[in-house]
Amino acid sequence: MSRRPDILGEFTAEHRAVEELLVRIEAGRAEDRAPGVLLDQLTDLLLSHCAAEEEHLFPVVQHDVPDGGAVVFRCIHDHLAIGQYLADLQALPSGDPAALGTLLNGLTELLRRHLATEEKQLFTVARKALPAAERAALGERVRADRADAAGAGP
Picture 1 (cartoon, rainbow, N blue to C red):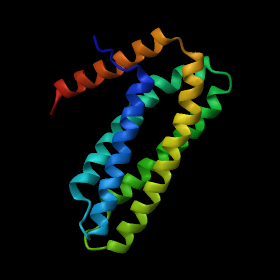
Picture 2 (cartoon, rainbow, N blue to C red):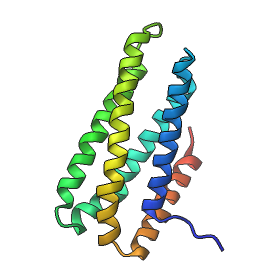
Picture 3 (cartoon, rainbow, N blue to C red):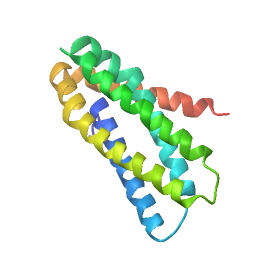
Picture 4 (spheres, helix red, strand yellow):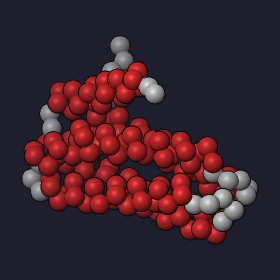
């Protein structure tokens, strides 16, 4: 019987999906293709991922982990910067490859650093502080919330 990932496994899998999209966007740029659909996918994934971390993981870490507030603060700071990059990319007029490249490079650098920091710091302290059953329950809650949101649709 397969086990579903706990909240940290869920978020780690999303980190791998973000990294894969970044690789695909970079490969497309090397071939002078606009990121278009891939950038939309990355934006959707990141907005959903950041919101889920902020709703389900950050409050628990802030409450249950010594100095958890400081770790969460750094992550929220990064989330805000990620959101700003995404907004700037969405607002960018087409036909400005230099600005597109600058924004994508900045976002990519920020994301790679942020994902590594979360996995090495945030997830490590959360794994130590939260019992496995609580992490599993949080993973189920994230999946249930997403299923509800997907069912609500426009």
